[in-house]
Length: 259
Ligand code: 13P
Image (cartoon, rainbow, N blue to C red):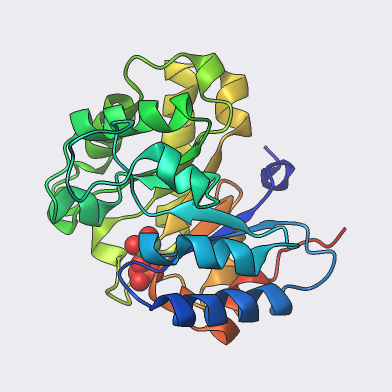
């Protein structure tokens, strides 16, 4: 299976960093540094408070804007929550759903993630569904079981025709923010498992076209070998997306083909 029939996507998840001004500066530097003719896609996910201004700064570029999370409700008395329509209004076309920090720190269950994913699709937002096992789960040979539960839980009730845009990010929890990335083989192995699962749940065509990103300590010095894996279609980058130079090196990973 030729991996690069799927357009590569390099995404930065800025997590809870940056004021609006810092966000605009970073977004502008990345925008100015992407080589003309870049054949992949680039995306950034700033904090809610920076979305409007980053959207304005990215105008005229092909860089995509994502929110890091959203509510499953459309509007109402949900103090502190941000609605799908609000992130769209701020310029987002994509949204991260079920990041491991949402799961582990904020207690989001597969049921909650299922509702958020459905809401994203209902609003025409592209969901980037994040899944991944903890170290204890990997060490007790539960990786596949966890991935299967998370993917099928998030997608329960969805039909294949709704999922043509779906992106999945495999982010092993033990690799996030630890400096200890999955080996290229470990990433490839998990991605193949997820792709085959999508094929079983839906269709081989959906599975073949679906992009699967790897996340967890992606850096300038390991991106090339990770992106060289046939089933790794992109990267979801945390810490290393916060500095324009480093993120630009990741964006221009070795495999990228220019138009
Ligand atoms: P790091 O790249 O900092 O490990 O974070 C990965 C991540 O959680 C991206 O969503």
